[in-house]
Amino acid sequence: MKTIVLFFALAFGLFGAQIDEFSTTMGYYREYDQALAVAKKESKPLMIVMVGDYCPWCRKFERKTLQRKAVAMKVNENFIALILDKNHDKGKYPPAYFAQRIPTVYFIDPKSGDTLFESLGYVKKDEFLGTLEDTIQSYKSEKK
Image 1: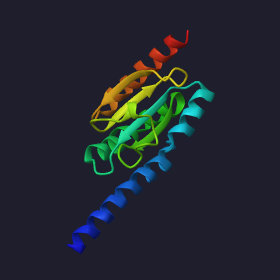
Image 2 (image 1 turned 120 degrees about the vertical axis):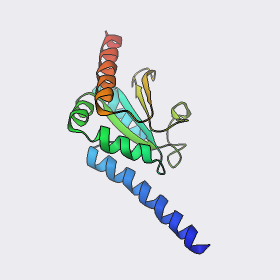
Image 3 (image 1 turned 45 degrees about the vertical axis):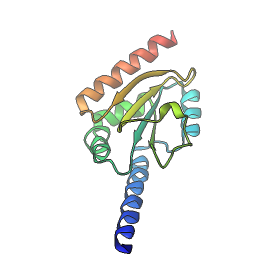
């Protein structure tokens, strides 16, 4: 029994470390309030990537979509990106962004707090690039 408990403790600790490693590598924020403040200051939409430390689809989304050069460049140029673990970071972000399914990406207008778009589940690179472009255009038209 101790072996099983130790295994799960190590596994969940490693997954949490993966989220931290991803955020460091990609330049994503890990604190909601900090990311929101920067988004307001820079007048860029806030992109909240909601994942779970136990979710294989979340890891796949990170590797196959978010880490692709074209996606990473578009995100870095046009958004303030934040990655959160839906359970471990619970209470550190507004309850409105608690995702029932993961991965979920919320695109938020930093001034109004309105959700511009919500992307559910694993999305391939090309589709996500389209989502990013649509969100950028929507945000720009709302600012006018």
